[in-house]
Structure formats: C-alpha cells, structure tokens
Image 1 (cartoon, one colour):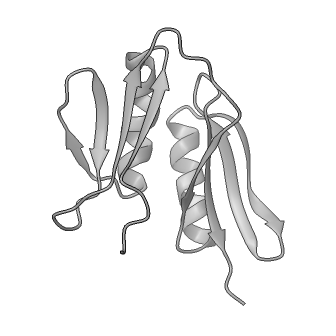
Image 2 (cartoon, rainbow, N blue to C red):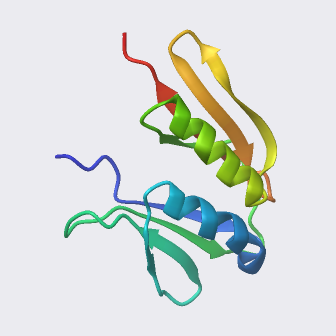
Image 3 (spheres, helix red, strand yellow):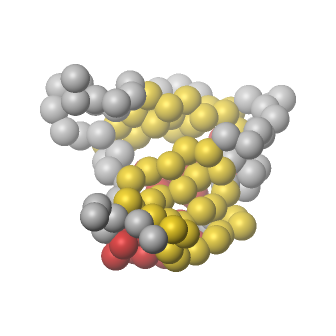
Length: 125
C-alpha cells in the first residue's frame, strides 16, 4: 500500500484569488499534471496509473480553521527552494525556513484566507 492518501479537498472563498499561489505551489510539490474539472483547481501526481491529487474549490461560506497540510521535502535545500517559490507566489505569514527541532527543518505559510501549509524535511539520524 504505497499511497498514503487519495486526495486533498481544500475550500477557499475565492477560487480566482487562490490560483496564483496554488498554480505555482502544487506543481513545485510534485502535483505536476493539471486536470480540468469544472469549479476546481486540481493537480495530480503524474507517476503511475493511480494518482494522488490536490483540489481547491470555491465555497463562499468557507471558514478557515487551524488545520495544517504539511508536504515532505527530500532535504533542507528543497525546503529552501520551495519557500522561495511560495514567497514569490504570494504566500502569507511565512515563518522560516529554519530548523525547528534538531531533526526537523521547515517553512510554514498560509494562503490568503489563512489555510495553513508547511513544507518540511525530517532529518534521519
């Protein structure tokens, strides 16, 4: 069972306003194949027949909560590179990238509505 999740369904109040961040961030994270689905901004991984996907859709009454979506990176340099991608794409409230614990390096950020995201690398010892 190599897949750890099937999909992420994220709601935002304004899909057009979400596009600059997510259309830049998701391909950089490996969700490289954009899929045309009416009312959604959806990207899939492009490796194999079964794919994981990340979808963003508009929900005018959406209320952001304190959940966080964290993406794993294969090294601190990739965390640094993805932090720069997110900064240029309009991420808000960025913290890091920096070590948070002896074996944990991450950048935390939010989309325009406060949906909390993270890119992290766990250092193997």
